[in-house]
Image 1 (cartoon, one colour):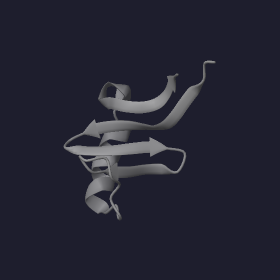
Image 2: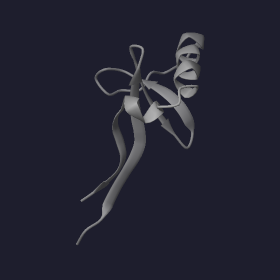
Image 3: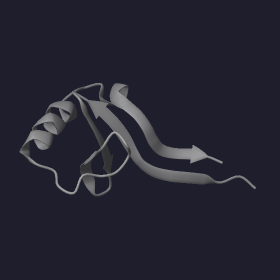
Length: 67
């Protein structure tokens, strides 16, 4: 049987790793754990990334994968 497993897409930009899914952006640590808080620094970097025309160039993982 074939199926899919899906997760939020992961991106890396300007030294930050973050997921950007249905609940919005959230920073991720290098070891994969999520930060407890997201501050103004993160949201400033996120806004610069969001304004880019080629955001998918910074995707490093996540999304849906076929099993």
